[in-house]
Amino acid sequence: MNQFKILSVVFLTLLITSCNKNDDQVTGVGDVMIVAKQSGTSTVYGISMYAYTLSSFESVTAVSTAEPGKTYTLKANQGYKTNFYFEMPETQFTTTKPAATTFTFSATFTNGVKQEFQDVLTDKVLPIPTLDKCEYDAVKRQLDMSWTLITDATSYSINIIDVDKLVFGSTQLKGNTKNSTISAAGNGWAIGFTPEAGRTYTVRLYAYMFEPGGKDYDLQAISFVEKEVVWGN
Image (cartoon, rainbow, N blue to C red; front, side):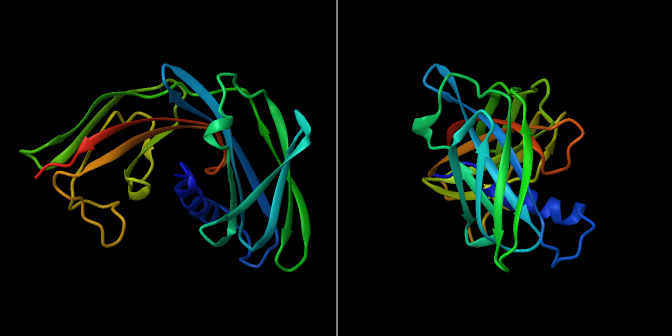
């Protein structure tokens, strides 16, 4: 499944609330981040990128100064013309960290206006989070989670996936947060969804590093760890 599509919705909301622009203003911003995940015993790296607008995109592409001959084509996220995304396929992740570079986005808006905007990506990455605890407490009827804090992690979040469907998404958790509890009656579950006793879900903890001095949507790096958990009674 796509790992980070939910992020674009979250950060688009932050973009809208942080910009002092008219809703019909034709302008866009781009964000590229390094993604780290576990593959066997190795840490592998790839990139994800997003383009946001308060208007409406028709198409978005991006080119890196490190690979000027390669064009990345972004696509609309879940039909939203206000944000486009690209996620590197898992088969293209490598143990080599992406180099520092600048990405130039070329956007065409639905009214025909064309615009370019850039995002500078450094080579900073986040280590994979370590889950100290991730298990269902049958007595308290809740999922208990705790993790070791990561230096340079600005914030965290938790997703729960049922096979290939995102069924739970937390709000952003502050960088000094190192535990969380999730109950069936709590907030964050998909509309109309209730976790089923005895069913196995994938719990995923994300760590985020924002760009120094950047806006709320300017990410530099993401890493995540996941664990399968059986939901109790």
